[in-house]
Image 1 (cartoon, helix red, strand yellow):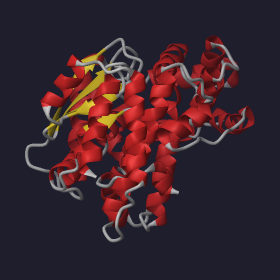
Image 2 (cartoon, helix red, strand yellow):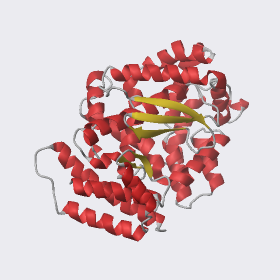
Image 3 (cartoon, helix red, strand yellow):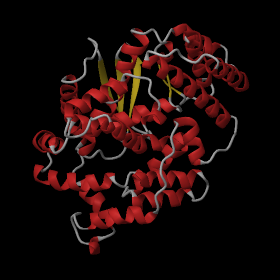
Image 4 (tube, helix red, strand yellow):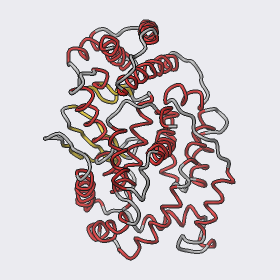
Length: 408
């Protein structure tokens, strides 16, 4: 299988010459990247070779025994199939939102109507400061959030404290290789709020987009999601256990538009709950982060209550993306939908549609991914009431080549 895996890596690098977003991370032999850059292969030729590798894998079923070897075979097969689908999309093939997410990410998000989100909005009306006469709910939520925006001059201190705590909690349960590290960089002009660029050698660069205000809850969200126990830890463990210890070259490349992304985003989001179970997050934010940010700790409990309900609106973004990318609604309608049903500010809704333009059905990986990961880990005993077991199953998942369809 190593021969097929090596060819898969080289094909992923070749696709990256046509799609600048495709290769999210690469830390294999530098000469493979140099070769891909020097010889830009045509997409039809890349597709043809990928189809050949798929046939080769199908003709070589793994021997019974090592579960990781069986999962590896399934992973390589599905990653190659997603590669073929991405090549077809680059070549102009039109897929519906759900067809695309199934082809690329091995999953389809549930469909929910406006009434589902309205029921959550009705509950929010009762707890968001202000009265309906003070303006639409979205405006009142945004006004409340603005009271809890981290002042730019305090942003780095707040993020550093959040990262330190996330790392401390993670290291209680996860053995990481010596020398692992990441650095934080603040940027603007991006369609995303933050990004982990894994560099290999157990090191990441995490960029945080400061174009829009960053509210106090985002410190823990981003520190966990991008760092510990999220993307940074996920990539470090794959490099350590699968690439280095087992010698599996396929883990030297991370194609963004592939099933791997649902696992990566789902575990990064669920990792926030794993690291901060129950009321522990609100307590840490209130006692540590609010004072560092110069914000009123007395508002922490109410803000946490609001945010918990707002999280239930997460699939509203999926619905906007589904309708927008299927051509059912305009850009302006998608922005208006997210302002009304996802309670985004107009500026944040504009940024989110930019994300949809760039990454399309990728949006499902955050909320559907989190739900699938939670269900999988809880089905194996990793419930909120069993935190040690929850960590154990979480670490197993982020150290293995499991597919989204294997989480059901």
